[in-house]
Length: 100
Length: 429
Image 1: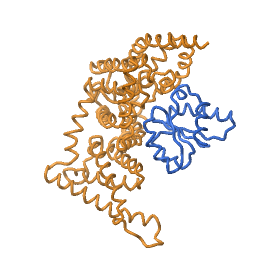
Image 2: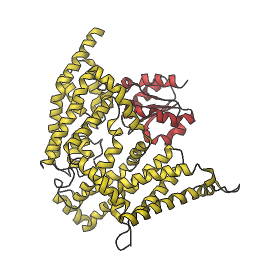
Image 3: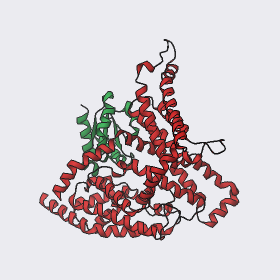
Image 4: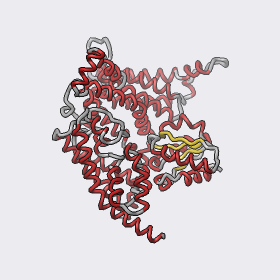
């Protein structure tokens, strides 16, 4: 599964990426997880299965959903508490509910 | 307080969200993001050229000859000197992309259209370089948006598309598809330019610069009240978990970048960093107010280590320390949390206002030099204070003073929040 996390510069979400990778490994999931600035979505839209937004850019949600819709890619915001406490496992669980 | 926050969440947040995702503003922001690397390199090139350390200057001149500074000024010419052009291309490209039309075509048309409006030099041997740079920023953004809006409408008009017979390669067919829209846009732009030149006797660049850009820049980059308003807005947005600096980015960059450019240019010409024109620039906030991220949260983390006893606070302190050094504070904002937290929102908004006032006084009194480098926002404090002032220790001293004040002001609030967390912890066990 290819999971893309978006925030304004792709930096703060990259902290979460590492924890999510660890969580995915524990579940022996085959996952590619990475972070990028929201403005670079068009570079990756062809190669993702799920898109998550950092809560600080949640106002971009409807815009990004519109961009991702033609590709059938689900988009959602990371739960702020999971985000703040860098809870990789909870976010992976969230991803699994999105991609069923 | 809780009811007040709920009311704001209901009315203020949707408006902020709309502004933050408004298509043209997003395109402007992404246009600035695109050129940021170039601007940062150029700013450091000037900083190195003008570093007020005599031994360094002598060593460079003797090692590479007196012309060594041309390396830096070349970089400047390719970036800051053509700021308006670069941003215009980026804005048009991103806007076209959001409409899912050919982005590179739109960007090239916008670039060409902007050049149409640039007045030639007096002897007609070239273009007036000044308008390609920060002075022309407002016009280039305006033209990028108008041209892209025209382009995306015109390419959808079927009767304007020149049909090629089957067997003509795709690329060739596409270039013909753009021919009529491009023709219409260029004729229109050149006609507008001609009319302005004949009627007003000056260029569109001069009109917009003198009536809008210059007054706006001089108000926002020198008055304390405007800086306080900016600080309050950024932190009010963050209090609701919205990326304040990002939402205000298009406005802040459009105004503060030209101001910073004037500072850097003057510094590069040998003006002392205390005597350059503009006090308030984006690094003013990034370096002296947003230490550890918006809300000076590095001080908040320090306050946690000093007084907090609850597991929750101490854990968030440990987790947020390392990213905080690089001014990344989302973990503490969402994890502690500060967002929507009635106790912590108060110092979170108040402290930046206090620091903005102190920083303004320190700079306008001449104790600390003005910003003469575009220090990226993620450069750690101390280093950033030294670099942004063109290598002045007083910049570092101001950061330390601001930090200490912020810690002291955060302490009682952290204590209050921590007491609550301790109680919750006891109730849970």
